[in-house]
Length: 273
Image 1 (spheres, rainbow, N blue to C red):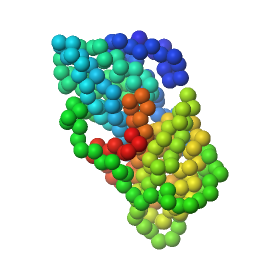
Image 2 (image 1 turned 135 degrees about the vertical axis):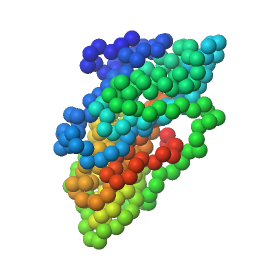
Image 3 (image 1 turned 45 degrees about the vertical axis):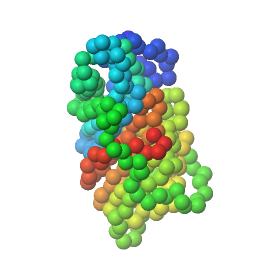
Image 4 (image 1 turned 90 degrees about the vertical axis):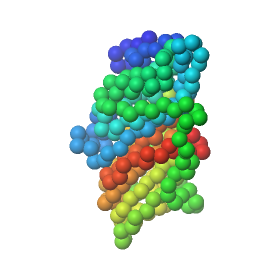
């Protein structure tokens, strides 16, 4: 089973594959979305999209099922990302596939994702008993204690402002919600903003986060919009934006963008994931 040229499986009726097929992966170029934000080929950030795959299984040589948890790191500078339903269908194709080892599965997934994204993708698989200790809380001081009125539910960068003496702080919120641009299903996330620069108005930042509530876009694009809007409106010297989205179909996506620090290496799994 492969996709017709240019046709995403998202929002389409799909049969579940019963065998491995790398053609199920549906790459999506990043360029058009970034162009709409004024981002050219010279990216203003580095980072990655970390995926966790919680429903991964195959058969060993004797036909006995094996299970694992997957971690896939897609570089932010990869020309393409992968559509989430296509990745789910691709991984389901392993369910009845006989593989010689966990390492063989890991290497094949890494090869296929790297080809789809046109960049080196790092893949690690863990047997359930070998999953690393998980960090279960995001960094930062919560904005969600603020008692504010909200009435804007489409992204509005005019809600953002900053001024005064420079500060260095980390803020977070569990109130980020957007919608899938194809199916309009809700996407829920926890957001972290770490910066150094003029103090960002916290009430305005929270209203801005809430303003994504009816916005339809992919996870990665939402995080890049937030990063870009903060840089333009608040002009921090240093900025990191990370989001941890709740899982759907056994997958969660966690984009990270920064102009000064590497993504956290710890295995982060927030309570809603």
